[in-house]
Length: 206
Image 1 (cartoon, one colour):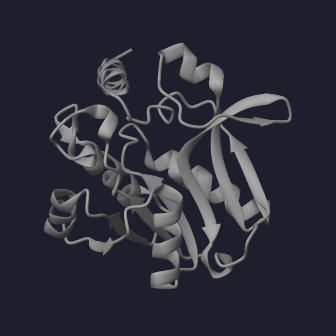
Image 2 (cartoon, one colour):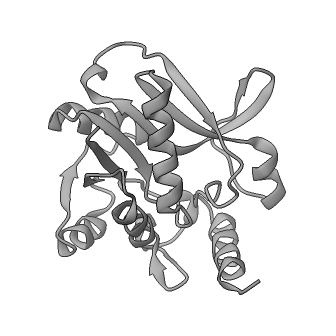
């Protein structure tokens, strides 16, 4: 299965109240987008990487081009709408969409998600994490869904059959994970502080 990773890097990041573009904010001395890119490049099941930018992130687009990556300009209308636009525009097949603000994501996690998608036999997969993990670290949440009695938060990692993207509704698999690194989706300054602290903790030898 050929998988294209669509790295969503067009977010305005208004809640961070910084002049720097959100994907270029540094965690552990590296821009968040660079950390996500490294994980995607090391993932065994990712065949191609495309960076989706918007009018909000011109410097991010320049950063991606400097690293010889394919860049697509999207309307900048939000994660879901921009992802759909990119998939239709480029006529993509199997697509992994990943937010550029997940600085602690790993290649192993990405391969695990794709493997689960390959086995689930459904056209779409969404990765979610229990709400209690977000509360544990004091992280912000945009959406909370109740699934089979559990409060779950989507983390910004999805897989979809791009050939079926025009269908109104797609049968969806939900993959619930408890990986604390994946929940650090940086939307606020407090989220950024948690990401930096967690990275420091991960870097310390046991």
